[in-house]
Length: 417
Image (cartoon, rainbow, N blue to C red; front, top):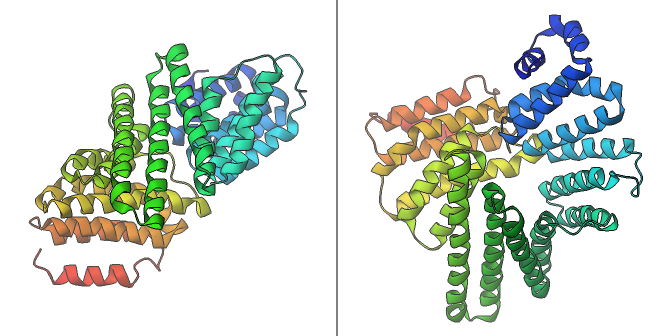
């Protein structure tokens, strides 16, 4: 029973429930389903992975044992990709409760390495870097106790999170130690698995974030010590170093994943952010365009409920940066190229139930997207903006459309088009 058949069963209606259950209880078919989820996750086809997991998780729980362990791990990974980290954490806690392996059993370190690392990812996604660091260290330690050397992956996880903890605590020596750890990870990865360019791009992004942390720390120190001029050069140097690593990372993602893959899109936004810091507004525009298109097609990282706000904030920031770059270069006409991407972005947000889960953020997104269209001054821009707003509120909750958006609608309706 092939992968397409498994997905068809997952998407079937209520009347097929008995047949679905019977077929999926066959070990071979259930194994195909779990393999399919892994493939979907690897290719960022998150909706399909979710559909399959939603169908098979009750069966895997019923079977117990390795079926339950593998399914819970995959489902936690799906929820993490969706930025639904609280749900991911609950699934991991359930997984931990059914694990009966002892640390010293043969092969146990591989299972606990996987589980502890996933705990770390979930805590990191929730902004709890302290607990994330604890679990990433546990993942390293369980291997070391089994006689396995610390890996570049361990160094990357620990160094990445340790740099955030050190930054927030203001401990500059620990921040430098964390940055050194990340650089060791990059070097070791290059020696051992240099062929994996996507992973290299991820580590490069972390190196860039470390330079950005340095820049922010220097900016803070400059304000406190009133040595802004002398510190400014050092701050700009850190931004330029961050840009160097981000540009290489983006190039690798684009080459190996495509221009609008979620990884590439997020990296494009990061490049644009640093270019704006360096006041290279014209150079930022192509990256902002790619970031917008990627965000409009992305299935991952939309979050859910309480976890939605931060992710939506990222999307709103893309639109803000577009307006900023074109304002600074007095390029109103150039905004027209974003129109289709803005419509797609709003449609994606609507499809992700953002209007219901976070109506205030949804309205803010619609307002900002409409403002980009209006700011272009293009022929018919008022009509195009109104169409975007009307499409956005069709089927939205009755309270959608507060004072801010209402005032914009009123203004647009008085314009000639």
